[in-house]
Length: 250
Image (tube, rainbow, N blue to C red; front, top):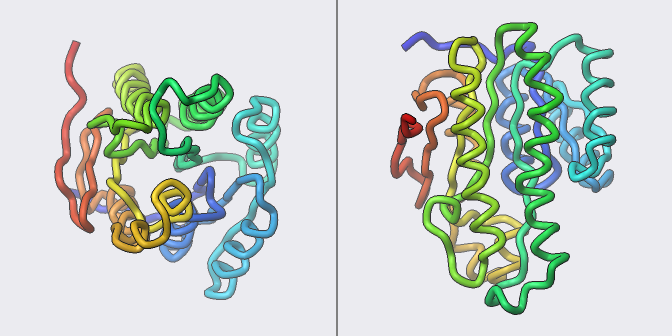
């Protein structure tokens, strides 16, 4: 398999201020990519950018709400004005509800989950795919979850939205079949992140896999050291690759 380089590639990472997004940003920057991260937390974004720049990496950031299409469009327009292209898109921003049965979910909680986990991906794809079509090149990684492959009780909205991310990936990949643009899903099991701690507590979170390792696998996929079929998904569990599957045919 031919390996590629990430040096000077323009990489966008949503939810790049914490958890897996932060580790993806650091991993891609270490390969020479100019990483552009976004989230709603300016302080956390600054910390990540400063850390990357302290090791001579390239990083910039924008504060935005990925559930607002106007924010997303303005963010991408600014990137194109500054850099002229987007080579890699990592749709990582995520939201999870409290651990409780479906009848106790409020409509707002359900809506918030889908707006962050599905609508934000749609907004970014809608804006960036035409740019990548003009380039006839690009790589899109949608971060799903093991919960999207095997739904979790008491996390119905999260499981359903992450399952939707896999379906969205498969559909988009088929639409891009005759281009040089690839789109895949990454489905990690539990990770030691603030999101996991929010739902299950610190003790549980500390027992989960390291997001740095998941980020390193994503980096190796982008470098084509690990092959994932277009539209396919990769499950990462217990700090190792559990499975790589192709998208089903019509």
